[in-house]
Length: 625
Image (cartoon, rainbow, N blue to C red; front, side, top):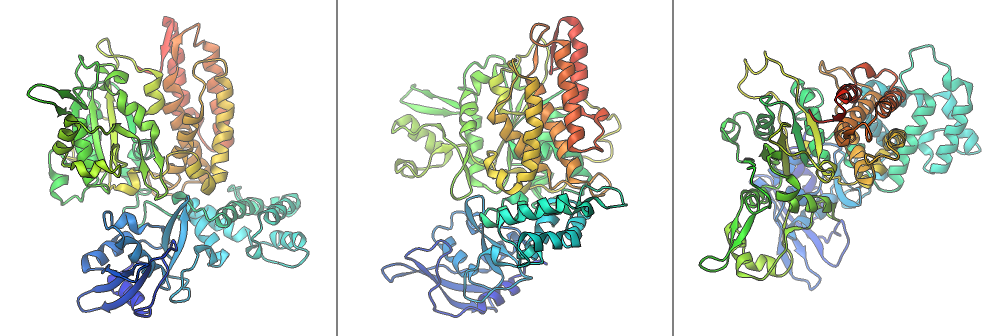
């Protein structure tokens, strides 16, 4: 169902006029609906301050259009994200909207959101929690959005089988006979234990699809844990790439899925490969995919959300990229291309901005890009759900800093009170292209630990001859800009999946024990984010459903290559043939445990280890070609 302006006006019109409504986050101020005008498509409302004064907060036709274009059925949203820069009026819009019958309040992580659930209406004029909706409806939504359609169907049927009903009665002393009546995690866990011990749980003549009533009960426990804690992450309840672009099913997005999900997991990507494979071109095409195909930006040689900076061999500090202070004819800041592009990205927070550092390792990255490498690790999600960082250049009340602000289009007053700083915008994506030869520098672990790495060595000589641009499909902020930064941001809503990732990592990391290649929390977090960000891509190239176990195994295989193998290099004293064999065997075994049908003979990480093993004959091996 698509929300329309007419329907939204009808919902507003149900509310009493000139009545005080509480804000979603209660405070002294209130909101009032004044009038709904269907002819000019306008909703008049006011903010009532604690001293009795009022401020207008009307929704114009343009505002209403923004709402209906950004609100999707059963997908959490923040009014703040739709109306950036709207000041206090955003909370007024949110308050009135939350009192209509089809909008509920919910949480994504620790942040308040609204969600449109039109199939289950609540009392008009009240703010209602999302978890008040009947649990059967919510569980149906939960399993449908976290599993393929066939697996979800099995779970929904198995959760109501006799073996579960009997376990519910036993665990609750016949108080309940339906698991949807249970809202206690301990009782739900006991129900699953009874089901698992019942022979009927495994009584199935059809092919094992990974379900069974016991598995369905585990899904319910994970769902209940989310519900009771008020924590629904993006990934746990929303098909974030649907319904408009359906990235999970298009052939273009299938091909570019690793790039898209790597970027969403960490907006710092290294593209490695032989010269001429189109590394810098793919960055430009990803930026182009953020625009409609009939738009001027899509047709432009260089879309405005793309910038390519050619790295020079003589860069040994950040002066050419970020800028420097000049004291010729007074003190002023000479602004580099990096800061200029950041300023543009800040002006369009909903558009992904791509900075391509071409031939990134022609100079030592940790020298000319030191400020970014430090600041990118300060990324945190604040209470408003926005990813923020430390400043890349600290504020100073100097003439040089004031000249920097002026050149970027800011005023001194915006920064003096501490409300604004030159930080890394959430929508900035940095991609470095990499060639490895005698003219380039190798990467330090400081760089590799902070970046995602994808190899581009495959060449299709028949490709690119029929279409001028890559057929990626429409991309946007939801697909490319992650709101989760750490493992804690996705763990609660995807506990079962995350626990499988951690089990895999423990075994692989045990093979790295005693080496400089052992991983820690940063890599663990990026594993969790990458796997969770891959869950919505549940279709193969032909549009067939993929089982969640396969999706997890595929993502683990890819992120192992990106984050673990890329750090391994050295002579036989550091990297022995036996070490590579044991690591390869462990990866194969664990991928097969995650998904019995995963073909480890086609594993990219196993293939890379085989390649690295072959290089040892020269006395030295490395991930990098």
